Amino acid sequence: MIDIMRVETTGASRVTAQQDRLNCTGVPASHKMAETDEERMKAYKGKIQRVANSFQIDPAIIAGIISRESRAGNTLEKGWGDYGKAWGLMQVDVTPDGGRHTPKGEWNSEEHITQGTEILVYFIDRIARKFPNWTKEQQLKGGLAAYNMGDGNVHSYEKVDENTTGRDYSNDVVARAQWYKKRGFF
Image 1 (cartoon, rainbow, N blue to C red):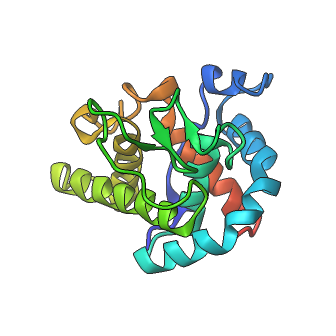
Image 2 (image 1 turned 45 degrees about the vertical axis):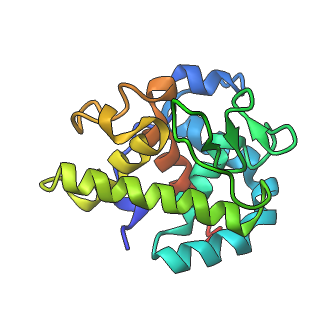
């Protein structure tokens, strides 16, 4: 299992930090947003842990995605986000031009978290094949970026987030995951 604490990160961009009207950016902003989501995240802790165990992935990574994608469900309307284009806590893309996924389970279910994690693992594997010389930590970050915008948009490690939402997706998710890990949440 990849140690999330060994993954380098720059954290949230100004665009992402502005969602919470934060006066900071980078890792401190990502940590503050993860902290804001902590109470809501507690409701999903057991589900996240079970899914993480079945995929042999750090549960903090799943929590980082849930925090970034839906603010632990806080931004969803009847389970939908991104103007009806994405489903659930992990915002599984259902659009014909995007992920083309069929939603599985209720928006906050273990089945949904399993589906989102399957998609993440798929992208980590794709990035590992595309960039076999990257370290496991770099492949994880590439997989996170691909989860947001597809593996065809990951061209180099130096610019892993150049095409992601806020131009910081993998860096922000990693920093949020590190916060959950550091806090002993998992």
